[in-house]
Image (cartoon, rainbow, N blue to C red; front, side):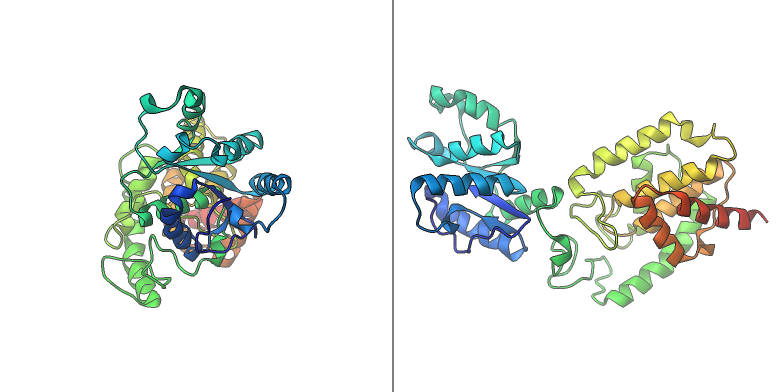
Length: 352
């Protein structure tokens, strides 16, 4: 049985399962407590009441089965201990096809691993891995938290604040102007970004219609405010829509832009398809939401520039924002009709 980590085990879903050697208990205490502060539910076998060995193993299996992800903390001791239950827990997780993440606490020299563990070692090092040998406990907790966010093991809506991008205990984004009032920051951004967005539509940046171009747009629009402008977000975000998990943003957006490339950037679209295809790509970009902030403006500039190339002059400053928001929700559920209708309205009215 694992030692006490200073927190009560929780199987409130979603939760993560952690597996470790008792020799690493002291270090795991700090990490577990940091994760709990970030609203991550953790289950480990200290949560089992005194029961028979058979019932204990059954409880382990059940909690591994129901966990969102299983973290295995690997140190030298695991290869020395004769009956390390970590290896058994790994087999259970693999059998249940669980999300597995290995946290390497020590530098492991494969030449020093007993021959009977060679195949097991070869298997675990090819799993998702956090190389934590030179990381502080805080850095390890941060890396684990990112993994949890990526597969939905954290209830994002319950987080009090975003530690990566916001000032501590605040919903205000860390910014270059050091504005700590949310309203004042929004007002400053709005006054400076709107004219820049118009310029980027009238005089588009050079480049292909791909993710690099989208990131360049974001940097041009928000670089004066945020150090991370133009970079893919590292946390999960949601409002009325639960946007793409951060770990899946790059493969999903690259797949989307590859589809656009194969469609010849809509240049060969028939007249009756133009708005429907623009609506599709706008809806998908919104569902992915690749940046921590500013997605709406960036995607609207992108679609406006793309639209101009195929003869659709879109003016988003004419759009009904409430209707557009509802259209985005419909598009998230693969109903692009309302979004197409909004694009037609602001495009056709502009052409009058």
